[in-house]
Image (cartoon, rainbow, N blue to C red; front, side, top):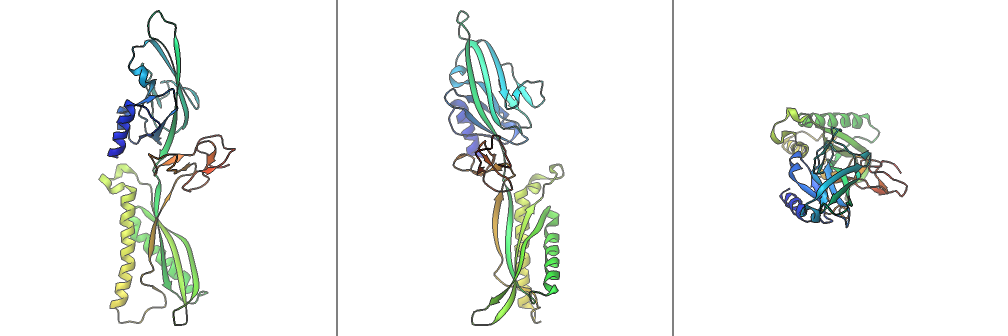
Length: 315
């Protein structure tokens, strides 16, 4: 975040093709300058406020302008401070509040450099993109020695296991979802056949009311990490109990060493990640541009030549 903040301040001094990203309302102190050479790209977190977007180029900032007139237009038409989500200062600076409308924003400025000169007109273009943080979840796989594959015991065990895991992470506002459960006959090395259940399940953090949280207790990644450790400890304890027990193993039991976990990232429909297009925001879920779409909770915007809008969810 410190690196991004430094990048913001550099970009307000000299516009470039690099990205400007706003995460919190306090970034309103940042000032973004336009360019007549290329549209400046600005990234604003969804439902947050944008930085201050100037209706000026870096050259005009260093000049005295006589009788300047500023006019902003967005994807929905003309912009005015009469809209509670739009703030335009007398000097033409734009702030977008509760941002959710990505697209092309233009500002036209009419001005004179001297009282005797005719009016000059300049149009400055910005590409303002909404983005959100990716949603993350853990995907676990585990194998269990099982009853015969057509046995109802396996089904009952599966239900009990999911209830146990769900209860384990409930206080963290996380949920466990079964992705697949498959029973197979496995030929053992130098041995016979045995039945095994291959479980795949996900653990995801639920949205939580920040007003009820303290410090980082509500942070989704913090809760998800705690849930991950609880589940890993649960399976480790199963192995330890089996080792200490003098009783024969039950018909269905966890096979030591088979628990595997991977992190999965996904974006909301209409958003995607693209490190090539967004090199300064490679882990952001950025709204899909015209010519692309994301129909599901995938991670990339897919090409679609017939898509003409930002945030398309179908082609």
